Length: 198
Image 1: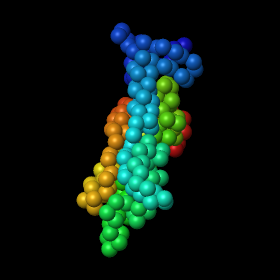
Image 2: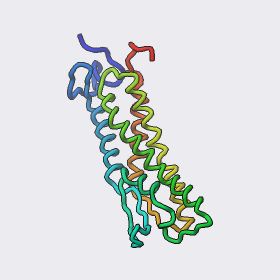
Image 3: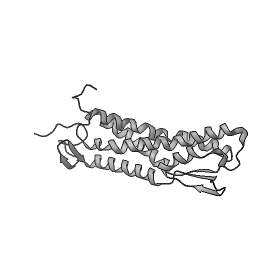
Image 4: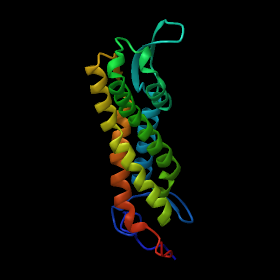
């Protein structure tokens, strides 16, 4: 007996979304596959594209330029000693610390959202979505959506302090992935299983 239509264009009506693969609860339709594929592509771009460019002085007193990707950006921004930044002024050290912490929060949030979204996006391919997995997927959208805010605030503060920080393009696909996760998870909420009370 066929599964009932969960209002996601899977079965039944003419012009319904074609099913590419069906194995038990796994029902891969064209639209679901495109959504998950686009999401994974955006998350991958957010990981491999340059995140920031920061000029500083290393431990050998040599000027260097760091160009970390997503999973190195928070470590650089949160770990660099303001003393090693060009034009450092001791009297406003707290301003440097605040700006660096703000900027580091951006990639930190995007890292969290990326990992959780990658681990839970498979749920979009199922006919009935586990309630807990759906919540993980849905909540992963928020750090992806919010990551750009502290990053850009911190970058603005660092520019005002004369620190040569360049913001790379990696936050853009992260933001777009957040939008896609939010929309897709919200659209899929009607497929959440009804067996659990949580």
